[in-house]
Image (cartoon, rainbow, N blue to C red):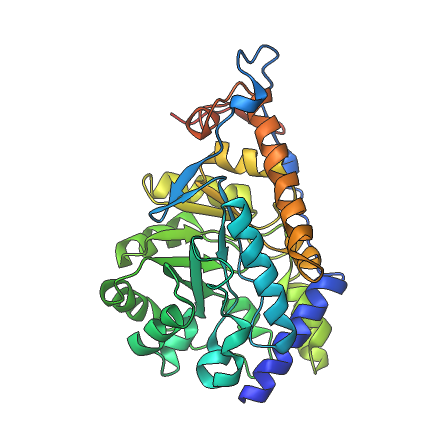
Length: 349
């Protein structure tokens, strides 16, 4: 796939994720869970503390804007609006895949945001499969240095690649290469899915390779099968995209599996988080921070303030959920019983 093709693909992804019918809520998602209400919380709403530390950076709230875009001229303003809003609200931000900018220098500016966000937790981003396509330590370092990042997300998107004409599906032997980058980069590596989820078994393998955090990105949000189906050039790929529209592990199940398999692993809960109550549920189930993408995309096409307003809506809802469960801080929230439909309440130790 040529670099021009890559830029066109990113333009199409941006358009379709904003305007296309690509959201895929699942019945086993966050709506299937309920936090135990506390009618007598014995604390003041204003006293609830949302702050946390993730990958060595202090966050004012346990929220990361997940990687969405870059590599297309339209993406430059979007990424800068997202990063500036993250700076103002004290949360983290990841850019989209930087492959395009590594292959074409004139696209670097679509990812560069440090001048508007000097203090945030900022993650670079590359497709892990590129480690089977000639990329190695030099390219990973270049992605981090390009934007002054605090770490690197390596995204795992096997189904998406399989649904793309000319997609990269050479995943054999990839674990060894990921392990080498974890060992030699000198920056934390976040292993992340893109919407089909990471199981407990895969998380244990990634932990053994040395990753610094796992972003589960489970089913329940944007369906990249639907995105690829809308741009597929053949009937075979369109039909396959429809078949895989409901594929994947729901995000809450991912969180529970990964926390059970890797008790001390930092976890980002992404995939289908649509409000602050979903964030509260994700944290009570075992996540450390929440990763949110689609709800911030449309505001980012407008202004920094529009993104700030959306972030503050999420954090207000999270604060209120914590107040309503009697949770003065995130440690207390993680002890709140969580009930799944048809099951007895559970709580983490």
